[in-house]
Structure formats: C-alpha cells, structure tokens
Image (cartoon, rainbow, N blue to C red; front, side):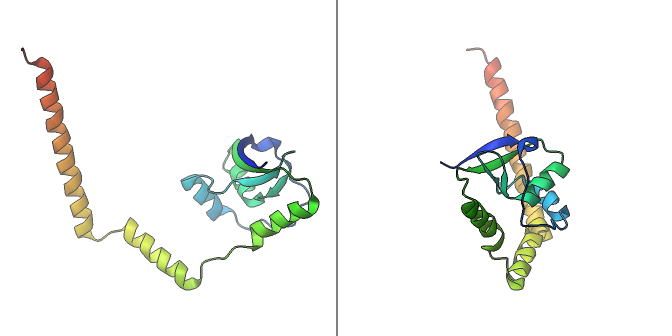
Length: 146
C-alpha cells in the first residue's frame, strides 16, 4: 500500500538514476522556498529514490532536513523505472500562448491598476475602523454597572 510520509532527507538513497544532468535548480528552489514542496518525491519502502531527484537536491540546497515522500510498495525494477519515466515524460508543459497568458494574469494580480489598489485600501481601512469601534463597545460593556 502506498502512502505519503515525511522522511529525513539524509535517509533517502539516490542510486541508479536515469537523469544525469539536474540542470539549473534556481527557479525550482525559489518555488520551493516560496510555496513549499508541491509534489512529494517518490521513494521505495527502503527509501531508495524513484522520482524527484531535482526536488530532493533543491531541498538539500535550501537546507531542509525533512521532505514529504510518496512511498511505493513495489520493488519490481520494471515498475520503478516506469514510475520514473512517467514522472519525467508523461506530462505536458504549457504552450507558449498558455504561459504568456498565465504570466499576464499573474502580473495583473500582483500589480493591479491604481483604482483597484485604492479600493482595497479603503475596504481595509473601513474594516479596521469597524474592528476598533467594536473593540471599544466590548470594552465599555465590560465596565458597565448593572
């Protein structure tokens, strides 16, 4: 039975990998530092890495000591190689148009036009004033003589 578990990174054994070049890990490290590990690495019940070497190496470089792992309960070399292949090949990157659309959306969310920023600031201000007055009313009700 497969399950997710948090393991000490030092306990994970890396051997017999297909990928020889991990490439530049900077953007992955930035993502993991910002959002955490989005997909667990995959290991066997003996903690041998099956898939996720780049994530594992990025976690090491970030100074992490523990990492979420999906533990598969097979020792069949063909199944393990299939998992490694599926993890690295059976996916689809964004098309250039999809990526451009996502980056434009992200920019508009991170840098909204000034009327949107002003409206948000006004709503925050009104909410804080309301909280302040509710706090005053609660404070008065605590001191009222009945």
